[in-house]
Length: 201
Figure 1 (spheres, rainbow, N blue to C red):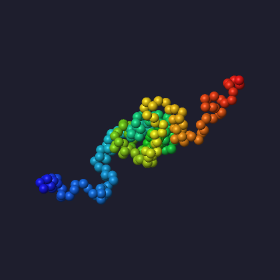
Figure 2 (cartoon, rainbow, N blue to C red):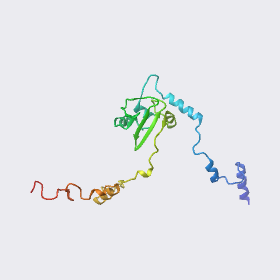
Figure 3 (cartoon, rainbow, N blue to C red):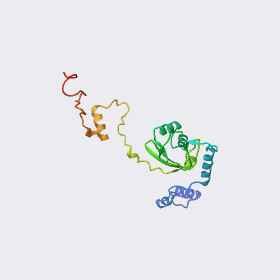
Figure 4 (cartoon, one colour):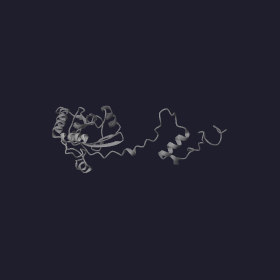
């Protein structure tokens, strides 16, 4: 009895009414999925983005911009992506020195995912994620599910090179099993041309 009275006293002291403190399933379902953005935080992000912007009359390179808004990890990776044709501005492949403008649509393929953003604000310095989010409109397709990336070919550390049987199993898992087990071009199991010795002997 004394312990029950003490428990009731603690609940009333903490603002409870004697009912269990945990919320029911109905109360949890009524909560909004995403909280509304704090106006002060948005204003601070906009101010930080303006501080990271270029001086009047200066241009912003595309490799610098995609790095500054955190679409890519390093600026050198941004330049490499531009040179490799993985960055498009308004549907055209661009060089790293291409000047980006407000309203441009930037398409970037990086780490197996395609990002499609519309430039809202030009910045030259790398900023945090909340500040970067106010610099573009994200129209990217949803990322592929994690199940799509099957860990085929990953071996335990220290197991050595795969045997011929292991290679056949890997090829079967990758969908290459229908290519034939003995190779092409009349090659035997030892890798030599079938029928006769080298040089026609």
